[in-house]
Image (cartoon, rainbow, N blue to C red; front, side, top):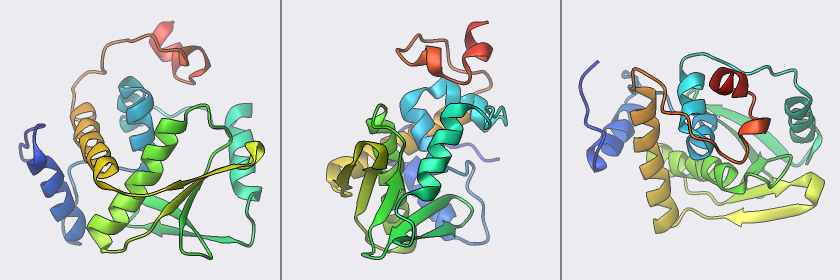
Length: 188
């Protein structure tokens, strides 16, 4: 593994170059879920990157999966791209991300923006997005503009920095730690 600094645009430019080159793997395969975890908790991201996965049978996870699988049936198609991102495309061409709740809206928005950024930067496909909360009957249009592009690229640098650490980031008490599925690892 070659050495790449964690600062500046060169990290993002190298990431883009490796993603575009079908014969090379990026140092870190960044998924939408990793972007979401980066926004919520870098410690959670670090555990996830090490294969420490949560119990997918919990009621919250099952509820979210059910809402995702049963909402907007017949109006969207799923695509897996390069093993990195899984998109739901609406018949209108917009990229849709369905969430059970808007409680963690910023991480969900970052995940969707990463999908739009990936399409634009890696595949030269421009799309707009829709963040949907069917249980709340709420939809938010999401657009990749200069500010959101900077947020995504700053987060890419942050994800790479976190994943390449030898040890997990320090504990930091957050309002949602009590409902986090990694809480037993952090606080017991």
